[in-house]
Length: 423
Image (cartoon, rainbow, N blue to C red; front, top):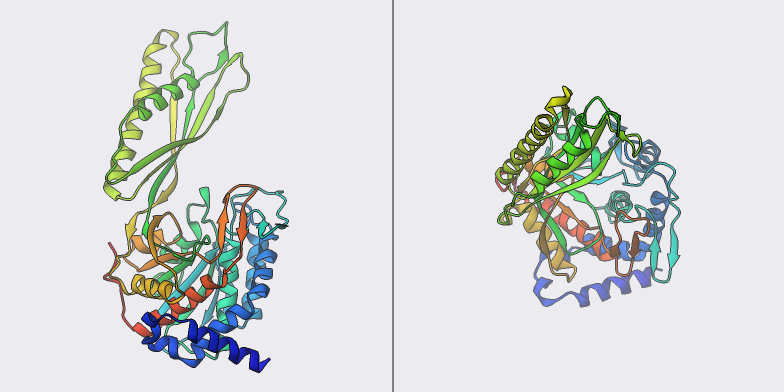
């Protein structure tokens, strides 16, 4: 076994491109040992990923998977393991400095309670709800401390591993918001890495902002024939949608909108007493998003006014409830920031080409607060995310975890507080 380990280390060294041969970090015996450990043990880590995926974690009901993560954090030797007031699970691997780097993944999935979360194999692919998003990231939180311990690697940074709740949908990033806005550690975190999705080349340094609303229009209701002429919430909703979607949006910076859900009414021959819709608006730019939001709210007011005026002779009147159900701030961790530079270096260090992208993730919150943050893929290939046929191909997936290891270690060696690198 020892001869095989030495052989694998030698193969890894010989396979390094000349471009990286001069990098002292890649020459360290403990780092080489850690990289080899990842590749040798990846089948076991994949088994843990499947185990996590088969624990239900529907929206707002992540407790069962959270308890599993807490138990696993203790098993792998993290310190001060606990679940905070919002449901995040935290565990420490202490370093020698007072700086703290959070390494995070989210517990929740988009799939409702009662979903079949059994993982199945189809050829080279695994099929399972939430198998990638974000069981893959949670597996990384368990594998990385084990790898560091196996190679006896010490860090200057305190590494805080956090499994967050509420990343998806109407969860509205509630776990990471608590961590940075209300929790006891809100002023003690220097940088943040989220592991989410698969692509081991992607580095999400741009936070795609979004605003989400639920609009509920209420009236008196009535019979479709006998009470015809009364205000109709569904008609008003149609006015709002037609008015809002006829407006042009900015293309530079890009902004978007979507009417994602519509409901209301009791029967086809009844004037509904209530109709509602849920709206998602996004932009990479804070001001562009604010402008789009104002256009939308104006469209709501105008749509209600049109229906009330048109049916004024009926002496009935509509009312509207405007409920904000999502607020994800935008921003960017600059390419020049130490954390992004470390991620770019680490990606090249495993012979992959880095791709800087923008996406909506847990990193939105620290970025919006001026804290360097990125989101990186866990490795492998994936597709059909958020669908019942979410699939994962783990071929060469070990490169993702190796990249995360190199990212953390390179950033640890840089010793540069990088809070100036965010806008």
